[in-house]
Amino acid sequence: MTKINEKETKNKRDIINGALLTEFAERKVSIIGSIVNAAPNGLTFEMRTTDDVLLKVILKKPYKDLLEGYIEVHGLVQKNVIACDDFVLFPIEKNENFDVAAYNQLCNRLHTIPYLWKTN
Image 1 (tube, helix red, strand yellow):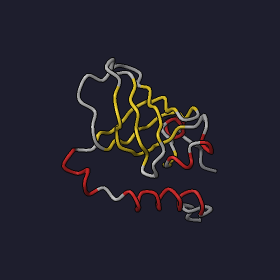
Image 2: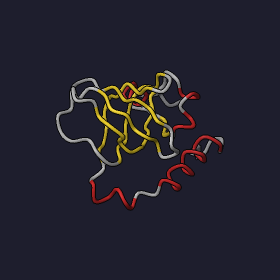
Image 3: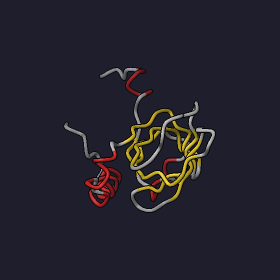
Image 4: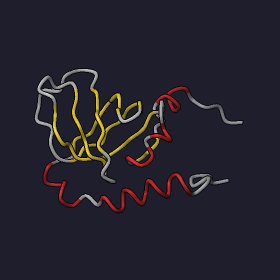
């Protein structure tokens, strides 16, 4: 029997889109969307997910640089709020080429095909 490493479970998160938020309440996720607006204090921002769901993101510490374009947020789902652990801001020049339909299809397949990654 394989022992599960504590670090592996700590860093595990599900890839979701806005339609899946309620199914993943109180769980760690990775979600992509575009920034709608950021609070002046740098602690929160609103994003629109790839499937057009508006949600609020709460940061652990203020972010002082410009937030714009697509972003991947890693954090804990709390209703329509993500308590952000970390994020990846897409380079502006990559925004126009991001395929939202393919990302939504990925999210759908990840959560509808049982044992997608099982190899045995």
